[in-house]
Length: 242
Length: 242
Image (cartoon, rainbow over all chains, first blue to last red; front, side, top):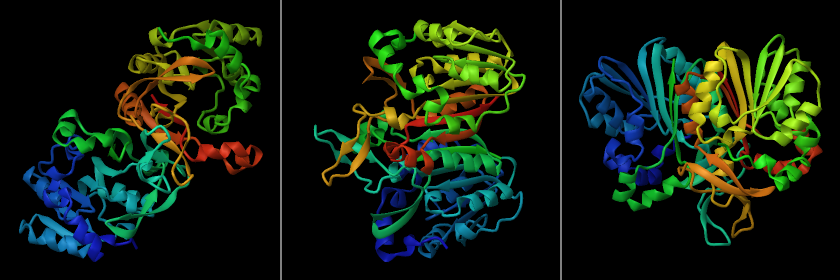
């Protein structure tokens, strides 16, 4: 069972105030880069693993997706997602991504935004996704970058000369990382990039694109504090073909 | 023209004292992991890009390779390689990997150890390698990990609490990194992992395996100072199929 931190009242209150919660996809700095990896969605059956408030599900329908299935472990987020749209072609359902059972060869696109780093049995989940996708389709996802989460103390460090750098340690030590982000005791699962990519490959996916997101010049001009996202990779965006 | 730092007298003197220079493949900690990615070499035509003293070329012949072509920019290293073996099936030749022209569909395996991070026009080199490989063959290489080389000051940092970590900054700023390793002014080319993998994919390679090398328990027991190589990734090993 995945830790359902999203239904923790404090976490939920904090999360609901984030730009990506209030403004939707356009409130997420990496969205333009992730969107650029997506195929045309016309007529597609799309699944969103970790759909949250359903922003992507609704966008996918606007882009012409035939059906969208949004899965999430958080009842609070699903309730808001359901309240935001009466579109009968979108189905929101509560699901633990650790114990998913999906219909075979049913989807044309699997999408997931910043959810996979919570998953303990990622091999099992990828197997389910691969089985649920039709041949020729894609899995496109974002995940916290292993360099962002590896350290036992993941916070900017100022060295003796006053230079600000991001600390990396414990990189080869895969497994849980407990952080206090919006709530205490948020559990993420650290894996190396190699492990992640090799899991995809051994599941049967072909790696199509790997992007370590960083802000564009325009994004930094509009929001100068984004500049630090150029210093160390925070998110990994991956496109894989089935 | 690649910087030929290997023929700098000070660099050469230092390099020739390294374990990997004196003991050959067994003096390189990552060799067992890199070797595990190699196919059986019987009857193969092998090319080694950046062959140095020729340790891999001679090993490949011992493993049954039909012919081995070892290329390097360093005349001093090629002279030692040539002096180490009279095997007529091994050809050592001076070549600038930036300006390579290889015969088409000629090789069954392209191998390179810790050379690609010196290359400015890696896209051009990969295109040459892809063209020179037969369909169904592999490119297997090691390269300095982008996390190891990204920082403007790539050296262990001790934070305010006394914790030792590896600094990451300037990650998205691709291009030259000048370090003083064995000699002053060694120029390496920083690319993100995403850029490296996407270059391979756009050249026509399929990513088969990505490994961020770290020492085994046995290696750390035999050589305790290797433990720090678990803290941050120093080398990236990649297997790609043509």
